[in-house]
Amino acid sequence: MPAALSLLALATLAGQANAEVADLTPSGFLIRHEIVVDQTPEQAYKTLVNIGGWWNPAHTYSGNARNMSIDAKPGGCFCEQLPNGGVQHLAVVFAKPGQLLRMAGALGPLQGSGVAGSMSWQISANPGATPDKPSSKLVMTYSVGGYMQGGFEKIAPAVNGVLGEQVGRLKNFANTGKPD
Image (cartoon, rainbow, N blue to C red; front, side, top):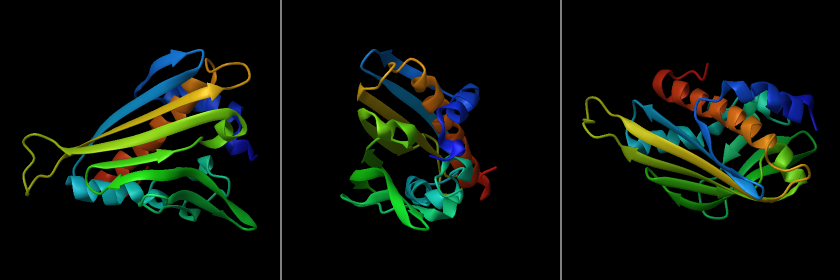
């Protein structure tokens, strides 16, 4: 596994979280992040699935976020192309453009453990949004449960930090066209 995806790198970024580990138990955890973007729900959904445009390349196996894609249909893949292979980060289990994208699986170093995860992106128009001034709320939750050697206490804040960074990049990309 590349150093960029190591637990050490995850732990380093844990302090950059912009939301919370909403629940942490010996058998799993729940992360929740919420952002507002200056787009309609339909535009926000399209921006979300354009993951290669906003995901931090430091948190890829290939070092290039453009190698990442989301095929937003049931059975579709949040995948990454590699020179001699690839990786499935998550599998799409529910897709309703402009409203909900749900994917199942274990991200990064979680893939090597006996865990299952569910990531949901709820999208809704903000009250007061108008055609001239669109605004949408995106709520991302990621719940993980199962067995992880050493428990979830150390990894949950690290995963929260990495996902918090990605959610922030998504917000920037939606509002400015640039993830940074």
